[in-house]
Structure formats: structure tokens, C-alpha cells
Image 1 (cartoon, rainbow, N blue to C red):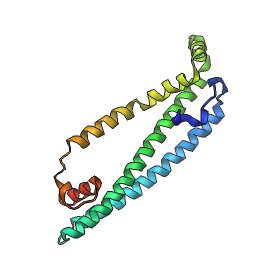
Image 2: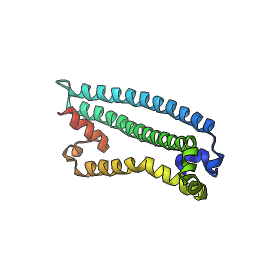
Image 3: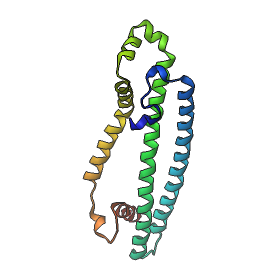
Image 4: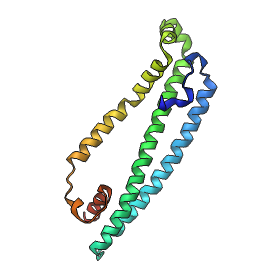
Length: 172
């Protein structure tokens, strides 16, 4: 499992609460760092869009600004994807911590035996699937938005769809 490469090949009984909590802390720090980067890039993007909205900015300058904004937008998209992945990893770790912390309760209900009988990759896969359900829905929604979004501005000397989007924002 790519999302939990750290625990690949380990059985649930091999996972230690201390290690999981350490990983959760690492993921919290990574989320904060990515959040800061997203905020910084978002500010850069907005500043460029605002520059292009100023009165008297010639069209060729707007195209240059739009291409710069498009590049920043692609960076923002990559950062957002990384941020979502870190959130999913965090959710998986949280679920594993919950399972281990509530082992006694799971034993009383007979669920722990079922967990132990499960193939470990299948267990991690199911936990990961629960954490990723929202991502799949969101990706489908974003794809639909991209397909339905009018692209009339794209025909104006921009190098990428992100730049066309930035140019459109400047002209609003």
C-alpha cells in the first residue's frame, strides 16, 4: 500500500501505538507545512491576478501575467494533492490507532479474532479505502467541473489551461 509504505509487511499485532502516534505527529507537521506553502502560493496567485485587473494593463502583459499565474496554479494543484494525501494518511493512522486502543472492546465483541484472521494487506486496504472514499468522489466532481467549464478564454495566446483560467479571472 503506497499510502502506508511505513507499515508494509507488518501484521496489525506488530504495530505499536507509540510508532503510530509518532507517525501521526509527523503527518500533522507535514500538513501544517503544506498548508503554509498553499497559503503562500495562493497569495502569489491572487497578487498576480490583481495586477492583471489593474486599469490600463495591455492585453500582452495580461497574457504574460496569466502564464505566470498558470504556473503558480499548477504548483497549487500539486500542493493540494499532496495535502489531501497527507490527510488521508492521517485518517488511516487514526483508524489504526483506534483499532489498537480499543483492542479489548474488539476482543469482547469477537471482532479482534476476525481482524487477526484477515490478510494484513486486506485490512490496511479496507482502512485505506474508508479514508479515500471522499477523495474518489471529490476527484469525480472536479473532473466534471473541468469538463463543463467554458473554455472560450483558452483561445487567447495562453500556454496552458491554468493560464487561460487566470486570464479569465483578470477580465472579470
